[in-house]
Length: 469
Image (cartoon, rainbow, N blue to C red):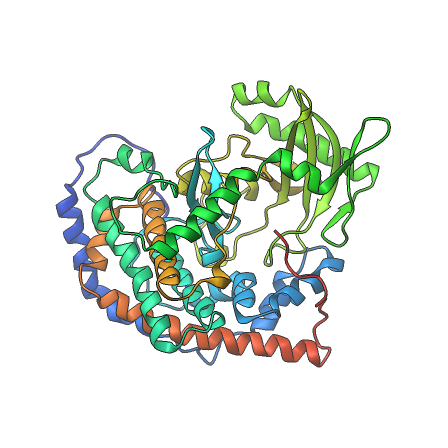
């Protein structure tokens, strides 16, 4: 296993003379001689590639053992579900691919389902990245390759043929290049001000009627999804006026008093990670109940708690997710950044670095020696139903995710250098289209190996509990 050469961020300094964006773009263009764009087209597993099932087995260590079969069962549901849950497998594969040594804060898990809608502190709904458990400082191309692989695999699941998958991946990479080309000339602060509002007209691209309808429907759902609507779905009010969670095992389960006390103690420590004014706001709430809640695919087995709090009476609920943050999938292949040893803090920094607007309740804590981060559970959130997209709608969504990823990378990286490397032609698009198709084949093979292992009872799997939101 080779270790990619990614330098640590330089010490902070405002001295020195900066190059123009045109000069930096030329530097990026010059990188093509060292790492040709065509070199990204190749994916072929080496003879030393580890068995993906062994990688997953190692990744399951430290998780709650009784939930590991649920994780494996959810990954077995489809090749796309396998891709979603196997960031650790893909991280090792990506470490064997060419890199440009142009680092940014990467999401680390930028597949199609990790984009969606959520509410800003101003209570407007935006479209953006929304999962940062794997966020690290690393090569921008690792995020883009994971994204296009997900486009290819989701396209297969949706019935797209090879030509249609190639078109969708091409649109995704075009969206990435298109937005970089725009952002490279903008002021740094202007880039940080950018938001993608799904309910407004976009002057950058003409949206087809079908895609507009899908986004409008998802936006309407997001606008209806908040703490008050969640309260009625997951909790009951007792005859004594107290509220408690409604059990729905294995997804939502009660915790014992000792665990409840530890989570509340962790929240008291979490408050210190908030800014002073937000601590004042949080202090007006009190905890009503705590439960364990299973979410997602790759996160299953990690410790995640849902906490119900009330502020100004029963009409003022607040749900906080207290989620364990473990070492990111790419960590073994990247240098350690001092100051970010706490994985909860790392995830929080990833949130704030990549999202245009972050949850005001975002923070981190430690419970029994384990790292956690905290955020609102429902914050005007909704996801595009990727499994139902085809044709122009699927292509537009792929384009939008590529465009958003470029904006996210531009917040901590240099869009001029990356844009100079990517260029204005379709060379990179064509290369990554070929790569995504090959890695799509790989994902199907890895998924089939998991299904076979489950059938032969070499891997325990709970196939009866599908993923929920």
